[in-house]
Length: 320
Image 1 (cartoon, rainbow, N blue to C red):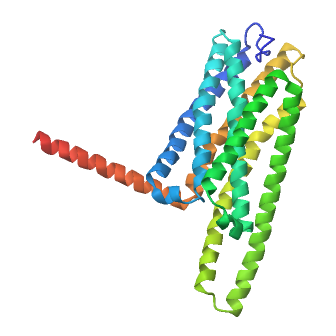
Image 2 (cartoon, rainbow, N blue to C red):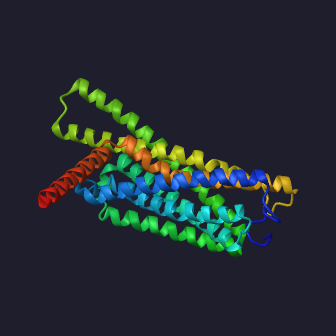
Image 3 (tube, rainbow, N blue to C red):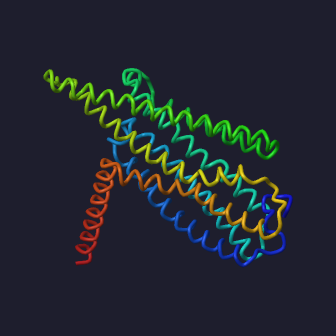
């Protein structure tokens, strides 16, 4: 057990560790159910709505929800598998290794997708003409995401064979991602502030043309989407921060006493749960902040209810 990733369970788990694991299992089960339902619902809405599928503004949301859905249906069940095995005192090293491997990949996939979503908003708001001139935007966005996902897999391989290099790569990559995100939203704030002051000046001194009015509406819509992404960035930072603090403040393997080892095991359980929590919170933010998505969801629900009523009415007539 000490030679795999389950070093804090040596003979048998303590009562406090078992209680903490039971609560964590309940939380992960709830996140699995809610995350699966809401992310799948978003994917179904995009599949049924031509307006949402046709616009690049909403396409990255679909990609993120697919990544989050994959994270939810893979990571949470594997956590439950390895945690229940530990609670029942039949832990297996393979469960722990597989769980930590997917935990290292899939949340990173969601985070990297969010990074490219922020870059896309930066280009759309600060370089609108360049954004319009780009051909095959959806294909290029997906290609950039897939390339970064492959880097996540390569980093996992490096972690298995050369852990120090993987840790350095993770630190550098995380730092670059944070700097890019900070620069992105600082630039968006600067451009939006100048654009609003310029628009107010034009409104007071000249008549606004139809084209200028349309450009203003498009700019405000792009800015609204950027605000939704920024809220998700804040939530992701809150959920990822505890893991960063714990990982870089403790040295593995844990050579402390059994009590401290058990405490660190509980802390790791909850920080890992916090990482995956973003995959459920993201889709809830989209529903709460995106009016178009709520309207399409309501339209889809009404169509489903109407079809159910018509089918039940037809079956009743058939019986008569």
